[in-house]
Amino acid sequence: MNLVFLGPPGAGKGTIAALAKDTLRIPHISTGDLFRYAIAHETSLGKQVKAILASGELVPDSVTIEMVKERLVKSDAKDGFILDGFPRTIAQADALAQMTTIDHVINFVLDRDSIVVRLSGRRMCKSTGRIYHITFNPPKVAGIDDETGEPLIQRPDDQEEAILNRLSVYERQTQPLIDYYRHKGLLRDVDASGAPELVLQSILKII
Ligand code: AMP
Image 1 (cartoon, rainbow, N blue to C red):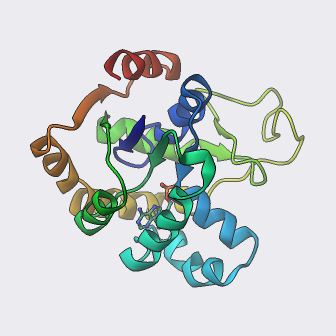
Image 2 (image 1 turned 180 degrees about the vertical axis):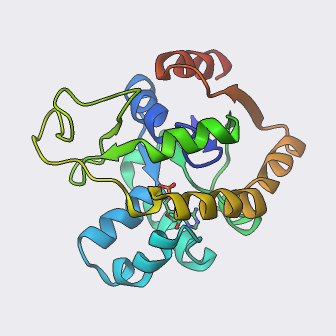
């Protein structure tokens, strides 16, 4: 089962993908996580994209497409995958269509106010990528990861200025993919406003 999770930043794609990957036994491939890993490990890719991620702009298509191409040929993705955060442009969607076929594109639908509340309260464990929210999904001890005991961080691009930029980048560059995939008959709208388990159930029903 080859799935694409599409939707604005903060709609819950990463949270739901982390749940769905265990249920469906396919890997969760997040381009944002791959870039953050490269940045944390100071690879040449990481150095190239660090400032772009902090600003909320998109990494150039050529760089992103090459990274995804290399990831999708790994053996764990041979029976399927959940792509989270890719494609984000029409050029990326065209490139993906050359690489493989997609079964469903899950479109996470959420209003703008809820997005801002979710993103500004989001906290993350840097080493594991585990995601929390200060109100909706707090850790057992404030500011500390439940399993590793490490202090949680706020992503630089979850600060207010970057959030607004990411939303406008989304509206300009990624929203056109909704029509692109609707025309191909692949788009499945999902109400992303509910609790993660409810959103997951809606997705499982669809697929
Ligand atoms: P995310 O974790 O999906 O919100 O992605 C974080 C950041 O990584 C984005 O704001 C972009 O700077 C970069 N990024 C992630 N996926 C892509 C993509 N498909 N194309 C270009 N840039 C991306």
